[in-house]
Amino acid sequence: MSKNQKNPSQRYVNDLNRFDYMSGKAQQIRGRMIPFALALLFMVLAGVLGNANLHVAPENILMLVAASVIGGYMALNIGANDVANNMGPAVGGKVLTVTAAVIIAAIFESAGALLAGGDVVKTVAKGIISTDSGIDLVVFRYLMLSALLAAALWINLATFLNAPVSTTHSIVGGVMGGGIAAAGFHVVNWVTMSKIAASWVISPVFGGMVAAALLMIIKSRILNQPDRNLAARKWVPILIGVMGGAFTAYMAMKGLKKIWKPDIITIIAVSFGIFFLSWVGSISFIARRANHIGNKKKDIYTLFNLPLIMGVSLLCFAHGANDVANAVGPLAAIVSTLTSTSLEAKVIIPFWVMLIGAIGLALGLLLFGPKLINTVGQKITRLNAPRAYSVALASAITVLIATTLGLPVSSTHIAIGAIFGVGFLREFLEYPNKKRRKPGHILNHTAEEAFENVSIRMKRKLVRRRFVYSISAAWVVTVPASALLSALIFYALLSLGPTA
Figure (tube, rainbow, N blue to C red):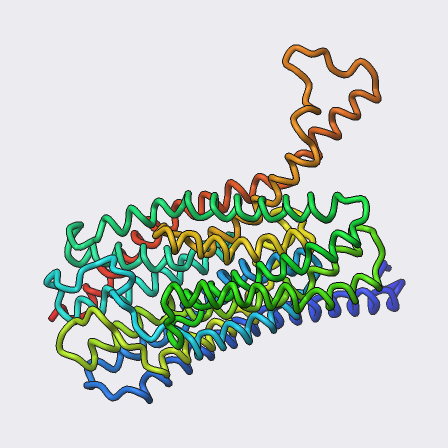
């Protein structure tokens, strides 16, 4: 008699266990498929929205619907990838949970896109190609559609690989590749492309230096003082004032440029006014909070929580106002050619196009953003509230400095560079070079010395090097990769459709 015949109850238990296992796996698969199903539904609705809001000739309906769908796909990917740079530090600093960060970011991203989103793409796709290069309307539409799809696919791949990349550089590369495929290398504005290449170095270095400087100030003036509580009462309100002034200028120059366009004198005056009001107004608030905490570093960290939340919320608002154009700019360019007989240097973005971008940003963040938020906030280096505060404030200050000096920068590269900056500063300050042995020095005389040397060598790696290398590589290949992909898509589209 077999074992199963001898033990029918055991066979029954085994069958139940197998059923439970298969049922659990099926539920996991269904859970993973829900976000993709919702994303697909949104893309279909984007196509329906485009077709319902613009009446075009029958032969152009497919182009309109395809552009709307791919524009929605691009917005989803921007939300999944780019927003993590703003909210990741707050999550890594244990100031916000991933759920709270996603909800706050979704609200402010969509508000920025709808209330202050760029109403004009001053030059088609950032001036990368010339609209007077002899490209006809149909070829131009294929070019823009190829650029949009290529950029979206590249960002999707980067998100899958846990690499935060610049969405601006992705769409720039897509337009460049499509432009070269359509009309040759002469159509590309190589001066603009050289500035973009320069930003690969300028952005992260600037961001890292500013963030490290801010963290150094916090450490020296507050955290390393004997009476941290007393020092915090003095310096935290000043830092809040600096954040208020910096973000006022940042919003005036970047986040609110559609609805408020002051001159530089007005921006400076208002920023100094907000700095003073924020500084003075926060003194009593910080004093009350300080009365209820001790003198430990972890107690002092809590004083940075509210300013940090306000800062990253404003960063998300400005990001939605600016980077929504990366999703819907090419879509708006295609729409303009469907309602006009000539290419225009200035392209008005209709509200329904902005709506696709805004909803796509928020939905992409809600469905796929937590993965990269965790990577940015927790896996590159360990963050706390002061470090995250330094990253957020550095992002705004670096953009202001670069804009004033006319230097090309990427907000994504700035934020990640700032995280690297605070991490490498920690390595330098906590384990300085004086702990290293001189060349030729005989090591490990005792077991205790061997253990000490291993400890020092391991502890110095406070920034995970694999993320430094992988993210840097992703930045370098973003433009050429999206350009090559765009060219291939353009040739495929051109072979399937008419050219005139």
